[in-house]
Image (cartoon, rainbow, N blue to C red; front, side, top):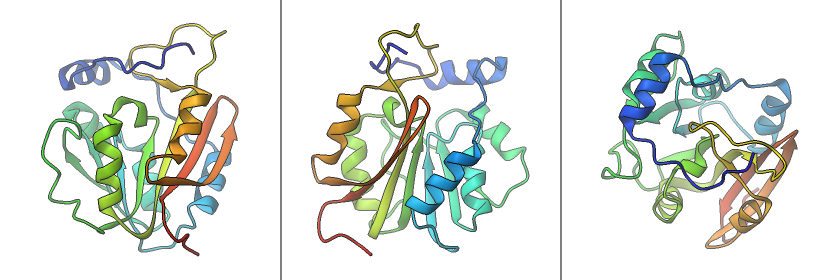
Length: 199
C-alpha cells in the first residue's frame, strides 16, 4: 500500500463506486471486535457517531453493542445500502469536510467518535478540533486505518493508508494516544483529548 495522499473523490464518485459494487466490503473480524470493545471501554447506552460510515457495517456493530449510534456519510447510495440492513442504527447524509457542523453533533454530545477506514479522507485540521468539541468528558476517538507499506502495490481509489510516522503523530495537537492495537496491516488507535486522563 503506497498511497497516503488523500484521493479527491466527490460524493458523485462515491455514489458511482457503491452503485457499481466496486467498493470492497469492509469486513469486521473477531479480533477487531474484541480489541475495539475492550480498548474503548464501551458501555450500553453510550452515544456514538460513525464518520464516513459507508454502507454501515461498523455503525451496525456499534449499535449491536447497545450504543445509541448514528452513521454519517456523504454518499447517498452508500446510505441507501446501509438503511437496507436491519439495525437500530440511524444514518444521515452529511459532507463532513464542506458543510456546516451537523445539528446532531453538539458540544459534549457523544461518547465515541469512530473513523473506521475513513480518517485519511477527512480534512484533519477541521475534523480533530470538531471531534474535541463533540466529545463528552472522557470521550474517545477510534481510528482504524490501513498502514502504508512501500513494498506493496497501489491502492484502489476508494482506499487510503497512513504511514507509521503519521500514526505516531496522532498523539500531538491536543490529543494523547490512550491505546493502540495491530491487526495484520491495520492499526487501531484510541485517542482522547489531552488533559487529566479518564478512568
